[in-house]
Length: 151
Image 1 (tube, rainbow, N blue to C red):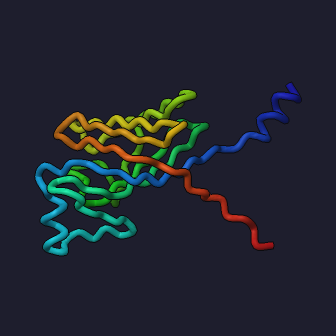
Image 2 (cartoon, rainbow, N blue to C red; image 1 turned 90 degrees about the horizontal axis):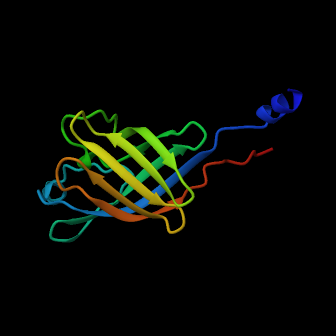
């Protein structure tokens, strides 16, 4: 019993933060029109239309690997009008971790289910949505979030 108590005190939440460079096909070309009119305030996101309807941007993923929960932050232009996101942040409904991948399930709203798979070896990300043609592909890299003490 004492060994279990001592072991449990040593546990801490494992946070995984990822920055993912992705691209997707914007068949409505919403991004292009927003960029042209200057309406897209992308905050820290860089967005580039690399071909007619193909958009490159960045997603932020935070996963608590102990509690199996987390968030994904999308650029605001990717969020549909009716949504559960707050400032582009969507809560993960389910997190599954295997030796090969992270599988993340979330919803923009009650109709649009998002399934995202991140390969743990290559960093590849694939995301598909139950409504529409918003299929995201790209690569993720780990972001170090621990800040060392100054003194």
